[in-house]
Amino acid sequence: MKTFVVIAKLFKRYYLKLSFTYSLYCIEMMGSLLRPFFLGVAVNDIIKGSYHGLVVLSLVHLLWLLIGTVRHMYDTRTYTSIYTTLVTRFLSVNNSKKDISKLSAHSTLSRELVDFLESDLTYIIEALFNIFGSLILLFYYNKNIVVLCLLMLIPVIIISFFYGKRVSRLNRLKNDELEKQVSVIAFGNEASVKQHYSNLKKWQIKISDKEAINFGIMELFVLIIIASSLLISSGVFGSTLLAGSLIGIYNYVLKFVSGLDTIPYAIQKISSLKDIVRRITIEKDDIELVDIKNTVDKEMNYIQGKLKLSA
Image 1 (tube, rainbow, N blue to C red):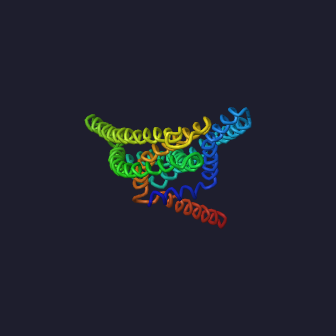
Image 2: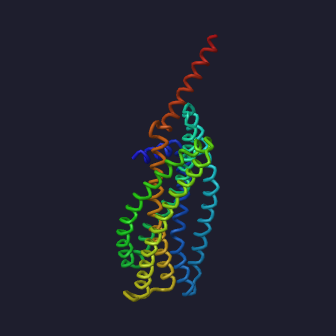
Image 3: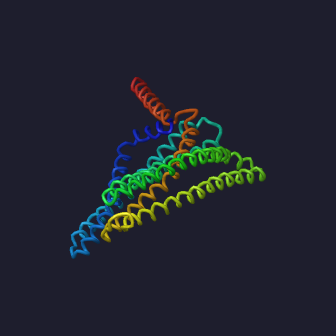
């Protein structure tokens, strides 16, 4: 729960910047989601001797391209600004701490927190668009495919839940080791340094192995969905469709399974974020302390100004 409280505080602090960039991203995702539909319409129109669908597809693609370009340019400015402000305030509030190793690790973890907002959260938003948007548009083509996709969600969510619990434990152990890094290097003992990096390597390999196994399982579900949906849409279990409609169905099935692939990734990133937030805020809520420190500084400056005027 604390994880979402911290994220909410960051959103509140940088409301305008984050709202603008995420709004652009959502519009961009809408364009990406609608392109296969208009591609199918364009193909069907061309078969009928019309270019109306092609014109609409071109306009949608150009609008998507323009919004995506602006969003990418704005993103870099937004998130580098947030990170710079966050990490400098965090270090200034905690500059009395003597454990330099932990401070160094926490500054790195702060970068990961901002990376979550910049990359991982947008990746999750894209997955939500792909899953639910594809289901809505697939319903337009064939209801049986939607039922198939919904049934496949059940085992995927169950597998992802257990995967997330295992990866959460491994991330915690890796970050425990990361917090020791600066002190181990500063101590200068060759055996300790080797052991430290060997431990980091071990935890990273274990995390990677879990990812690989989960990837294999997920791709089996992907194969089942693609094969079954193509059989359904090609007329084996129902009526035949135009070529453009088949293109649309295939693209939306791919988008749906792409969204499924993101579920384990999202669970892993959220579990990692929970551990990061726990380390940064378990003793002191740094975001709240920044507000307190800024308030105190303003009050002190005000008092000092009054004293100078009185003098």
